[in-house]
Image (cartoon, rainbow, N blue to C red):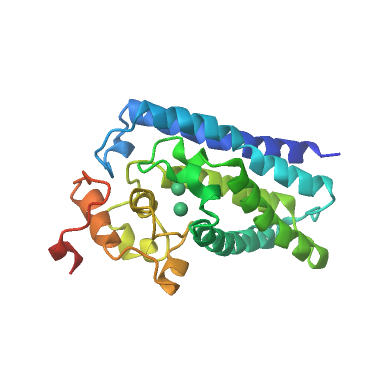
Length: 256
Ligand SMILES: [Zn+2]
Ligand SMILES: [Zn+2]
C-alpha cells in the first residue's frame, strides 16, 4: 500500500510537532542562550499547558490526511524535478491558503474552528501543536485538495509536499516560542519579507493582525500588519527589553 520511504516520512510528520515541543521545553528549562531574548515577561499557567497537551493529540492529523491522499493514488510522481516543483508549489499555495483560511477563521461565524489555538494569549512550547481537530482538518484538506487537482495535470511528488510539512512543523514551532531567535538585524534584510517569532506572538497577544504564516507579504497587501511590529522587534531582540503586558504597544518615539 505504502512504500517504506513513504511510511518513514509520514511517521516523521506525525511526531515532529511533539519532538520540537519537547526540544523547546528542555531548552527553556535549561536556559539555553538561544532562549534569552524573552518576548513577553509574563507567566504561563499550568492550565494552559494541560489544555495544549490535550489539543496536541490532533497533531498527527497532517500525516493521516496526507496518507489518505496517497492511498487514493495521488502524488505518486518521482524524481528530483518533481520533488523541487512540488515543494515550491506547496510552499506558495500554503502561504496563500493559510492567510485566506486564517482571515476566514477570524470571522464571527467561523471563529469556533480557531478558538482553541487562540486560547493561548502567550505562546508556550506546545502552542504550535494546540489546535482543534476541525482546524487541522480544514487546513489540510484545503492545502492538499487543490494540489490533488494539479496532480492530474502535472504529477506531484509526495516527498516534495512532505518536505513542506517538515519545514512547516519546525518553523511553526520556532514561531510559537516565547523568545526571539533571529538576529537583531533580521528586519533589515530577510525580515522585510519573512515573519519572526515576535511577529506571530503579537497575533496571539492582541488576537488580530499579523495573520501571515511564513511571509509578511499578504499582511502588507491587505494592510493587516501591526504598525509597531518592527519597533517591538528592535526592543525585544536589540535592547533585550521584553514586553510586560499583553496589549503593550511600542513607545511613540520608537515607532517614528
Ligand atoms: Zn488567529
Ligand atoms: Zn499561532
